[in-house]
Figure 1 (cartoon, helix red, strand yellow):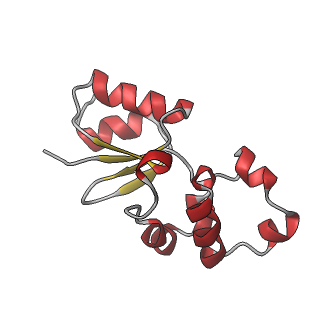
Figure 2: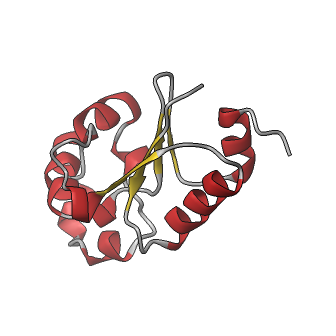
Figure 3: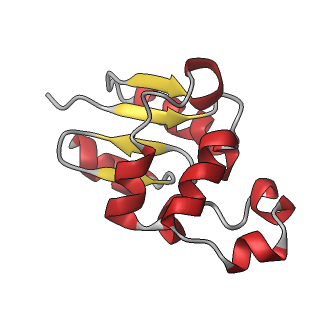
Length: 119
């Protein structure tokens, strides 16, 4: 049995879809809400080192659009770490983490592969 941690914000529509899919398929998981549970236990630095800010940050989000052009043009992993730590809505959601992998966003087919639920 794999242990899944789902990171996100509970009122995010994509996070809701992912949680509903996991529950519908009887997949146990731990949900870590960026806002309610805080950012201290979130491995944001590791995600940025492993995947880069382009994969970790949601460049279609309202939070991204609210950044200045200078912030966007000078973005790097260190800047992303500072900004996303303060504004977790910049992170692409949900983040699904297991011992073997980390994925950003929700695609039903990827979740089915990850959990062995080939429907």
